[in-house]
Image (cartoon, rainbow, N blue to C red):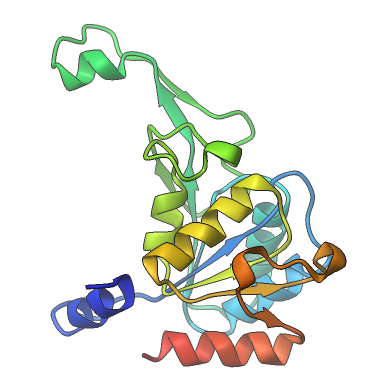
Length: 198
């Protein structure tokens, strides 16, 4: 069973299941379209999920947070590292040290999901990356321009069959993995509404 089918089945069991749009993109700089994407998602009555860092994640989160009225919250899935993870797994730990990645969470995250998953970027498809959580939690994914980490999340979305669309100014119109590109904010809204009401 693919992820969208699993979520539809779960919706029949869960009461008032919240819908989530995940926004991915550069953690270094905000795309010029980040704020309008955040505001758009805030008007849809859903929650926003990002990796909780800077760049696109911060700009989108801030715009979502500052949009009024809104019903959803800003969720950040945060990278961290447990130095004695093997000892925890073996239940022999005596002193556990947790390190949250530098710069996380951004100021707009209302619900931080603290993970022990440190990997990202070129290692974004590894089992030790929070990218799996970002994608699997989403009812739809919006991909703004980014680098290796964004590319890995797009690839994961295609593998998990989670609806994903690109938006923003991609260099040389090179959208990763051939996913659709929304040319306008209205087209992006239409894509999201279609996938959030299934």
